[in-house]
Image 1 (tube, one colour):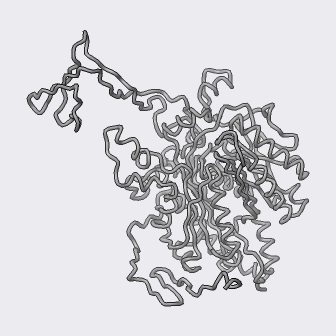
Image 2 (cartoon, one colour; image 1 turned 45 degrees about the horizontal axis):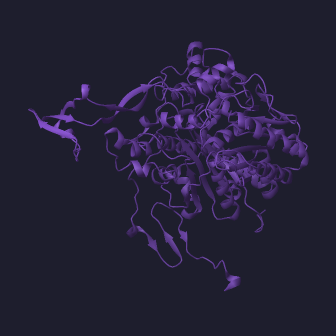
Image 3 (cartoon, helix red, strand yellow; image 1 turned 135 degrees about the horizontal axis):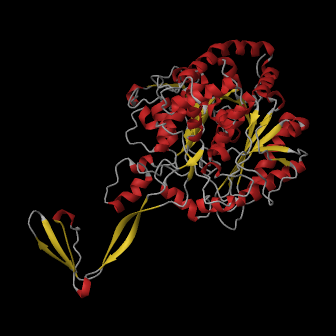
Length: 623
C-alpha cells in the first residue's frame, strides 16, 4: 500500500531527551522522578541509579535508604544551590567627603587613576608608583556588599551534575552547556547515530528549531557583556555572540549535528517550545522537511534574573510562603503551588528536545514511535491592559486544540480519553485565569471532569523549555500509566474555577491504551499563547496501520528491534560517564571549494544525499 499524494504527513515523535530538575529526560527518568512513589520497585531502582550516576555518586547500585533520600532531596525544586542566596553581591552608592571641611584624601596606585582626572582632584606623586589624591568635592563611588535574596527557591538540575565538565565547554554560558547535553541526550534516545539520521534525507530536509526565551544571562553571556564594565572588567569577544536567544539552536547545528538545513529560533516567552514544535509540524505536514529537531534551553537561575522577576511581583518570596504556611520556616520544596493558595512562580533551568519525522520516513527506518503531534495552535491576546497580563488568546488556542482533537479522535475519545498538562505556574493570577479557560472549554465540549496536571509543582518554570517539561511528562504517562498529581498542594484555592475539572492532589493512574490524546498548554508574557495536541503511541500506530496497512506496520516493527536495542544501550550507559555529549568543535568543516555544484544538484561532503536544485515555479499559474 502506498500513501496517496494528497495525504498530509504525520509528524511522529521518534526521540525525546534533555535535562531538567527531575533528571535526564530520555528513558522517561525525569518523568519517573516525579511519580517515583507510584512506580514498581524495579522502575524506582532504575531511576535512582540514573540519578545517582548523573549526580556523581560512587555507589549507584544497592543504594541505601539514606542515599535514596539524598537523591530525592537534591532534585526538583529546592533551596538555591547555583549561588549563595544568603550572600548576593550588590553595589551600593557611597558618597564620601573630607571631615571638618577638609579635602578628602586617599592613596592609590598611579595605574588606577582615571583617564580623565576630575578638575577637583589634586594629585601628588609618591614613591613606588603611588599617588595621593586630595578631592575637594564629595566623591561618589560604589561599595560592594552582600545581601540575602528574598527568594531562595528554584528548580535546579540534580546536585552534582555539571554539564561543563562533560565536554570542552570553553566558558560557554550555562544555557549552551545544557543545549549541548540536552540535544546529545535526545539524539541518543532515537537509537540512531547522527550519521544515520543525516543519511536518511537530503541536507535541506533536516531542520533545527530552537532558542531560549531570555538569551544567555549568566556571566559568560549577556550578564558579562553588560555588567563587566561596571565591575572593573572587560567584556570578552564571546559575550555578545553567545548571549543571543537563538544560540542553543546554532550550537546544535554547528557542534552536535553539523547540519546545513533550515534553522530558526522562534521566541514566544514561556510558550517558546510549542512555537517551535508548530514550526516543525507545519514543515513536515507540507512536505518541506522530513526530520526536525525541536528544543529549547534556558538557565535563568541567576540572582539578577530572580530579582527582576521578584520586583515584578511574579515570584514566590520566602516571606510570602511562610505567611501561607503560618510558620517561620520557608518550605522551598513546596514553593510552586499551582491552583492552590500560592505566592508566585519558581524559576527553573532545563533543556528539553524532541526529534520529529514524517510518518513515511519513520516507517521506512523503523523509528521508535513515542507519539505524534496532532496539532498546535498559537494566538495573541489582542489589546491588553498590561504587557505581562493575560488576555483572550489562550481561550482561542485551547478551544482550537480541543476542536482538533474532536476532529481527529472523535467526540467520545475527546471526552473520555484526553487530559491536559496545564501551564500551571503557581501565581495567584494564573490559577484564576487558566482555570477559567480550562473549565469553560471542558464545559462547552462536555469533557467534565477534565483531568488536569501541572508539573511545574515539581520542576518549576524553565521559561522556553517549559512546554517540553510538560510534554516529557505526557510521554512518560503513556509509557508508565501515571499522570503526575499536583502534590505540593493540599487544597484548591477558592477562586479557582474547577466545576468541570479534576485537579488531582495525588498521582492518577490511567490506562495508556484508553488515553489517545493529551494537551500541553502554554501562556507567555506579552500575549504569547500556544496549546498543543499530542497523540499517544497506540493512537499513532493505529493511524499508521490505517494509512500504510498491517504488513507495512509489521515490517516497521521488525526494523524497530535494532533501533530500540541501540536506544536501550544508550539509556543504560548515558549517566555513568562512558558516553560524552556530542561536541564536534572544528571537525568536519567544509569550505565552499569542497562543494560539488551543477545546475541540478549540490553535493556536500559528509552528506550522502545531495540538495535538489530542480525547483519548480511556485507561481506557475501567474506566469
